[in-house]
Amino acid sequence: MPAKNKIIVLRFSAMGDVAMVAAVLREFSMQNEVELVMVSRPAFKPFFDDIPNLTFHAIHPQEGHKGVLGLYRLYKELRAYRPIAIADLHDNLRSRLISSFFRLGFYKIRRIDKGRSAKKALTRTHNKVLKPLKSTVERYAEVFRDLGFNLQLSHQLVRVRKELPAGAINLIQGHQRQIIGISPFAQHHYKLYPLAKMEIVLRELAEFDCQVFIFGGGNSERNVAEKWQDQFSHVKSLIGRFTLKEELAIISHLDLMVSMDSSGMHMASLMGVPVVSIWGPTHPYAGFLGYGQQLEDCIQITHPARPSSIYGNKPCLCGSEPCIEQIEPKVVVNKIKEKLSHG
Image (cartoon, rainbow, N blue to C red):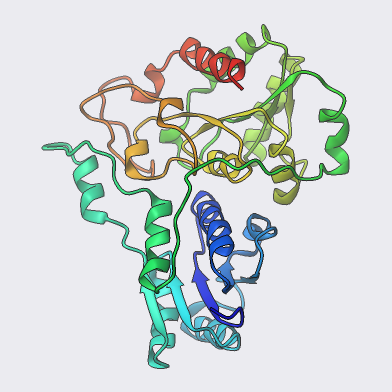
């Protein structure tokens, strides 16, 4: 197909989901001579910076693209690219409205199948169907296949080494120690590994010849991370010190990332970094495991009530002690040790 053909790709949030889109578009671009116009929030642009034949177009849902009139304005901006098709990878009210505008112009439109009924069966309390569902990245890929394009995902980690930002050079270069990133926070607190137990993990990691960087969060999370930094000589907090683009560059130099079921896992996956992930009421069977990551690197307990949530916005139903709190720090440390020794 000639390179002048363009596809509009819609995915506005959340951070981890957008990072997974970037992993798919990277492989799509390698397999198809088609230009892509990625429409998402401006903060997520760094995920797409290195993808050939891709133009990033920012959506400003609280400003110029607010409401129906604002989305119509966005539609006119996107129409100027003269696309041949629309790939709706979000399937929310905004993406459906934009797609409707394009449909009036007889554009080819395909939308993600989120598999909602299968996810309900996975998380329901009674007659739970505990089986792996189609991964989110494959659901993304299916949209492009439905548009008539070939796309075969490798599901392999591909190492990406980015140039370090000036403020991080002294943190990394010249050190012979292995470097571990830890992303201990999450948007939904039900997915959060208890901070007291994470502190034990950090303490025990002092036995290894490693450097630990803490990623992700706002002011309250930064206060926690800086407390750990003061407490442990091998721990450095990077929260609030770098832009997303700079964080991705630093992550690309890690030997391992430790993360919740959160964006930290997906950012590391995009950089080809292996991840030890910790799961509570959510489950990798729902399809949100980081691209190229391995199920055996997911730390979780077996309980008939798991999973109880797809996104982590619903509480654990495992009894008086939430399932994520039943994971002992030694289990996490042993998995980290195992990954580092085989790295």
